[in-house]
Length: 101
Image (cartoon, rainbow, N blue to C red; front, side):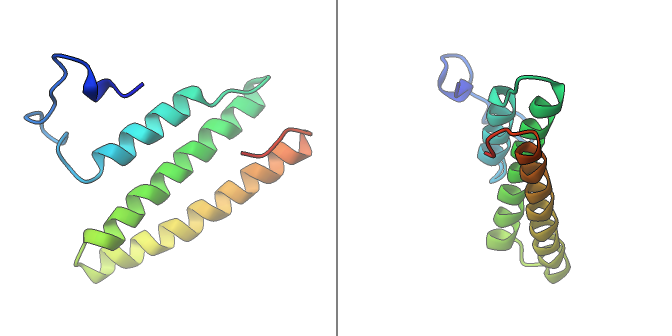
């Protein structure tokens, strides 16, 4: 649910709420809340996949907007590491005979 469209929920003046990262953070949170499985193992894997995807989305924002080379380099490294972790979690789901996401 996109809470930002609810009446009385204007967050524009709250610190940290009006940044290029907010949509990615909110999307990650919503997807993590919806990620569920048949047991704790599957649920954890699915929530972590969404967490890693959120980190990728935030790193992509850095690559678009940050001028600092070191920050951009760290964001690129983060994307590679997050993709590796997602692959490991997808393999774990397959090993449990669960569909990957």
